[in-house]
Every structure is written in C-alpha cells, then in structure tokens.
Image: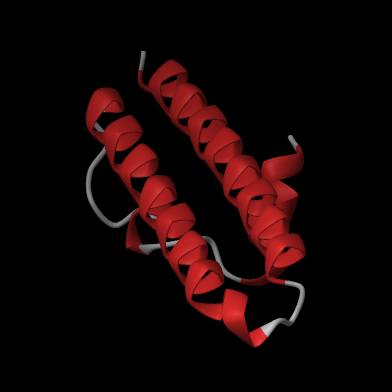
Length: 87
C-alpha cells in the first residue's frame, strides 16, 4: 500500500514539475527580455512555483507521506526537476 502511495506521489510530482517547466518557458517567451514585461514575468514565475508547491503538498497529504521529502521543501533543484518531469 505504501509503495502504491509513493508511486502516485512521485507521478504527481513529475506532472507538477513538467507543468511548472512549461509555464516558466511560456513566461520566458512572453517576457522576451523586454523591461516592460518584467513584472508579469516575475509574477508568472512566482505563480508557477506556488502552484507546484500546492500540488506537491496536496499529493503528499493525500498519500499520507511524512514531512522531509525533498519535493516538500520547494521546487526540485537543478537538473533533477526537469529529469523527474520527463517521466
């Protein structure tokens, strides 16, 4: 049972990370290094991170997993996040 809950959690994190990366890429295209678009870009990045954190927390609570998971501390750092999002 716990293995199934962890697998569902891992899949939820992967989907959330993939959506986060897509949102950030779309925000970057919209920003286009135009100073007037900077505030919207920062807002989009913050919203993407908040949505990711909310999704991961909800998945963790649903799976009844304890605190201390790497994903619970925030967005997955460096290349790990994009690699997790691929699966």
